[in-house]
Amino acid sequence: MGTFNPRVETLDPPPIPTVQAWAASYDGAQGPMIDLSQAVPGYPPHPDLLSWLAEAAGSRRYTGYGAIEGEPVLRQSLADHMTGLYGAPVEAANIHITSGANQAFMCMAMAVSGEGDAIALTRPFYFNQQTTLAMLGIRQVLVDCEPDNGFLPDIASVRQAVESGIKALALVSPNNPTGAVYPAGLLDEIFEICRSARVWLFVDETYRDFLPDGHVPHGLLSKSGWQDHLALIYSFSKSHCIPGHRLGAITASQAFVAQVAKIMDNLQICAPRAPQAAVARGLAELGEWRRQNRLEIATRVEAMRKAMAANPDWQIAAIGAYFAYVRHPFAEIASEKVAEQLALRAGILCLPGVYFGEGQERYLRFAFANADARTIAELKSRLAEFRIA
Image (cartoon, rainbow, N blue to C red; front, top):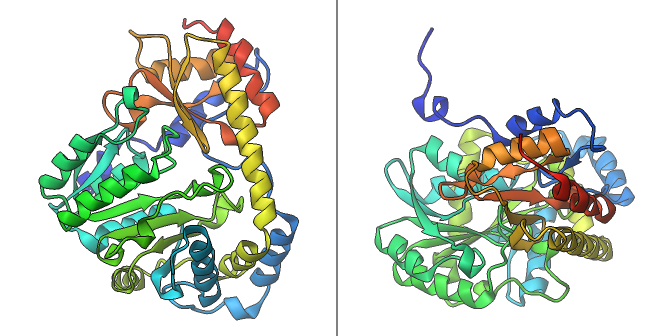
């Protein structure tokens, strides 16, 4: 047998299938499995969006090759949406549509760095970003996010990472896995550090649509010179309930978009055209529906708080958007063992903190958006009765 690329062969198995395999061994004794493992919308797409998807998929208009940068109608629709959200002008030329947010990150990393270069991630990190860098041969520098500070990036650690010679610093806010929402002032400070050092700042905003009404995530697009130091990631999967269609976007300078276009053109991994047409209409016409979904997620946040408050040994370290990062009470037991036992004995499926980096053994990630408030409330009794064999 021939050899495999060691950067791929030595990767850990994908986390979600590993955890879902535990569910197959659950005997159902505590009731139906409460699946909090994956960030999936727990409600259906809007009926109109489904109709638009069907219409576009059945049209010959979208069966041929399209623009590498994405459908003009979606690029313009997202530019208009962001201009309204941030109060700063964004043009269609600043937008590149990708096959999901993970592809966006991969292309951004490739655009600014190569083998042997370094990109900084926060710790805990989003595991798909970490494995992407590992496969590309890009070194990882970690910025600490301490529980005593709500898992926000430590500014001293940011400065140290930037001064080490990284090409970019990647942040996720609202964060995956912790749910922590980075304050606008903190993002401003980090941007200034990156700009002074001529380092790119990547901000993954996949979950920004689940912030409270009227909350503007940041003012980075109003900063002088943002085009030379900033690139944003967005995903339509969660806000429009279409993760199966894999649509993401990059917002950056025209020069940055041109670099991403080179990568995607050579790899021939462009985003599917028909869903882009449907989502362009969704952005423009389904604002109130998205708002109602945001309110629904807020009820699930409150349900999670109540369930954990009833079990004080299980402490919420951070919570927001789709996630709660929970400190489990078993100090001497690895988080992977705790998560496996929760699945097998309590019918609660979640991810162990160790999947998000070293030093996370006391934590579990609960992705609660996939369960309604009534289901989340069942955590109260199941955690109270839970014992590790």
